Image 1 (cartoon, rainbow, N blue to C red):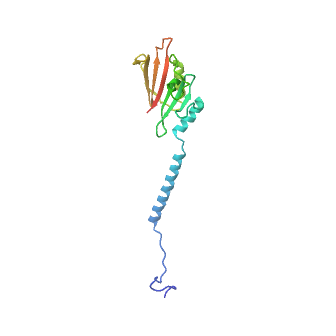
Image 2: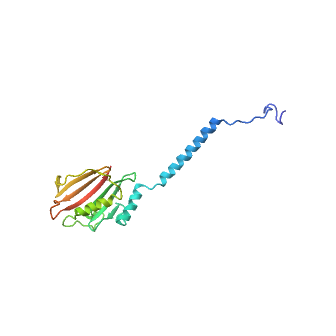
Amino acid sequence: MCCGKAALDWPCATFALKPNPMLIHSHARLLLSTLLLAFSVSLIEAKPSERQNVLQLCVREFGTAVDVKQNLFTVNDAFVLQLIFDRHNRLTELAVKPKYFFNETHPAWEEPRSFPLLTVADFNALVARLDSLKSKGRLVKAAMIGMSVITNNTGYYQDQYQRAVLKWGEVGTRENSYSGIRFFSVRFY
């Protein structure tokens, strides 16, 4: 009998486990990696989505949404701004349309006798305001005004930007007394 134990149970000499530096190092790296991953995921989850940011900016710029489901905001008496997001909550399109385009869900927004129009100055000012929601980037290729396909008395044009395409429908000529912008959209790449 040795050390109070039977000789068969334990050897007489006491022993201690020596720590393996390589094993400790790999456990420490694994623990550190797990902590960093957890921290990164929490930061990603805490970051507001582009949808939340753009909707907040839109409320500041245009007031409360008139239709939360369709993301509609009042631009003026005749037009609304519609925000369109993809499944990842990224803004894909800003569209300014006459209210009557939505008369199926808003029966009070009846189609008028003539097209509601934005002046070219109002159009340019509104395009600049929308850039505060999400930037198009610099102009890459401007539309050729006066050179377009015309349907339903509307000429269709587009400007190409670094991160978006600006498309609009224009009635009449800019020299004509009955002229203006019927609708437009900014589609992001």
